[in-house]
Length: 135
Image 1: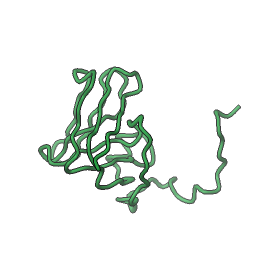
Image 2: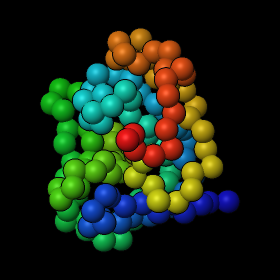
Image 3: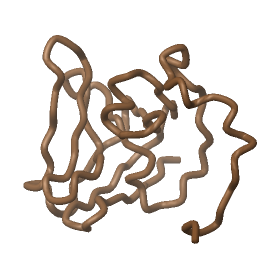
Image 4: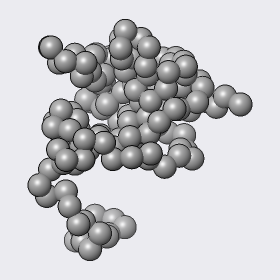
């Protein structure tokens, strides 16, 4: 059975739905994804047959393609939030997991490009876990 997932950007200018099933969920540690997110990794869902529908703000969506590579990312031109992107000439939908507002009943399938991870992204299990901002 196909599912529908809803998502949006941080400022709310862009909203979307994804109709269908996600095929994979990867945490990518490559340098390009780290640059995209400003974090240790990108958390992206991929689907070959799911359909993306922009509900609002499609005019606020911009896509950047890194020249000479297959690397692409879409984002809100108002707030900069990562948004879904059609890749490989529309054959693959990539959806940043953090852009979804719907519950995600999936766990990541794998860390990919793990050998490229940031030097500080190792053995993090022992650091403090806070439920709110530090005081």
